[in-house]
Length: 241
Ligand SMILES: [Zn+2]
Image 1: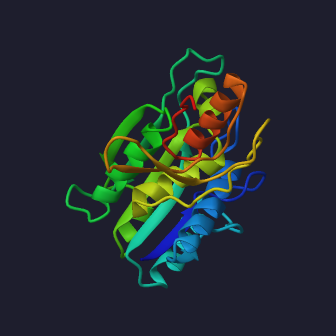
Image 2 (image 1 turned 30 degrees about the vertical axis):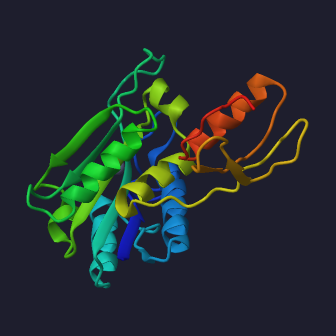
Image 3 (image 1 turned 180 degrees about the horizontal axis):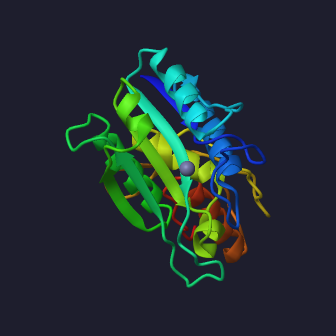
């Protein structure tokens, strides 16, 4: 695919920057954007970064973003934002979560938006779903199917604790492509080197091939590797050998 990606707003500290909460929208959106672009490229897609870092006003930022977007013929336009307004700075144990905007119910971006919502929800964020907006300049003025992702809330402690830019980016990439970039797992085996291999069950002819990451004598070490793998987007189970 050919995809435009940008982070919303000017950089933090400049006029027309994004929302400020426990974390800052413009800064985090740029981290997620860079990681999304890197992962999409690793998966073989052509990506254009349409982020504006030098707008003179809010409308100037939007104009520059849209001009950069429409300069390329692409399959999808992706805008990365963070939400604000949750007002939960002390944390109530529940995330406020993610939502994705598209221009209309018939937008070709809508199926991607739904998958992005599900992928972010799979990280543990509340799924606020796909929303329709005909008011957003970026959705109105771009040519390709476009979506605007509100990753999570900058002013909700629960969202901020759960959030990290790499897993957020991986979820967005998975929503768009259905694929995950393999993360290099750091293997901290405490007694045995990692190995991958085949195992044959006795009794019948069925072969089972397991992919192994590590072998641990301490159960909690195995569980912490399982947590890392799940965070990186892989299904992982702990089995006794
Ligand atoms: Zn924003």
